[in-house]
Length: 94
Image 1: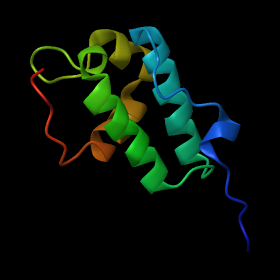
Image 2: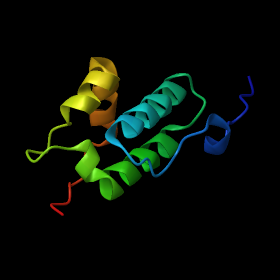
Image 3: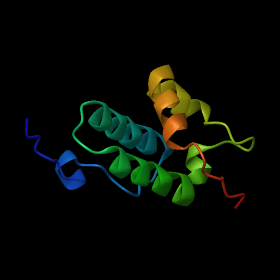
Image 4: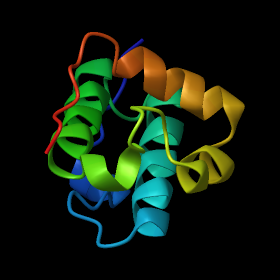
């Protein structure tokens, strides 16, 4: 069984969202694409790392937890997947 690999640009994932709501929407798209096997785990992890490093102030609160807007918009299962993909990443303080 040969599976066609989909590029991230075909899915339409924005790497630099400007608001927290846009970030939550882009993470939702990435998680759904990973679950439906449109992107690989490596690509999903790379994108989530990018968001955590460059947009950490939109993703995390001051205690290192996900912001309430992110939690509410993603849901429990996607937050669990996001936590799994972020396992081993140290969050920058600045």
